[in-house]
Length: 230
Image (cartoon, rainbow, N blue to C red):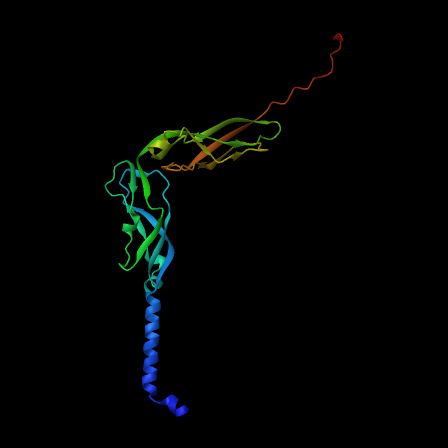
């Protein structure tokens, strides 16, 4: 029995090796579909313009093809970029995003979400707006807030034209004066978070707070001799 098993051993081993190779080849050529989240980038924004709408940060893509190719495909090796070079202000729709992928010819994109991207470009404008100090609390008993001075009193805001027209002022972080008895000054951040606009230069202001003591009420003295009682 053992002799029959060992007859032509080399040929039997060679046949087994070929069978294994064929099996791996067939398995590798089986079609599969895999989903990836691919980062979406915006490049070549024209000078003097800004993207003024929400752009998805990634694209969900489903790719079909031979298993061996899909196994070697990594999301880190894939990216998609929308090129804005030469565009004028306005809304541009980028369709057929699948054509922006660089994939082997044996792989096919079966699903893409979103399948297109709208990009709204606007000219960058700027304007000066006043700064409003936000005061929190009240001074100590016997004191009052007499004055608040700002340096600077205005700051420059820049960004998308459509949003900038609605910016009338900016505010500081709250300046706490609860229980304060004396005048003081401090550097305070400006609390401004525009969506498509931002502070161009000054992001803080100097706030000078003047606290005054209230006059003490006059004490009424004893009645003078000779005064008539009322």
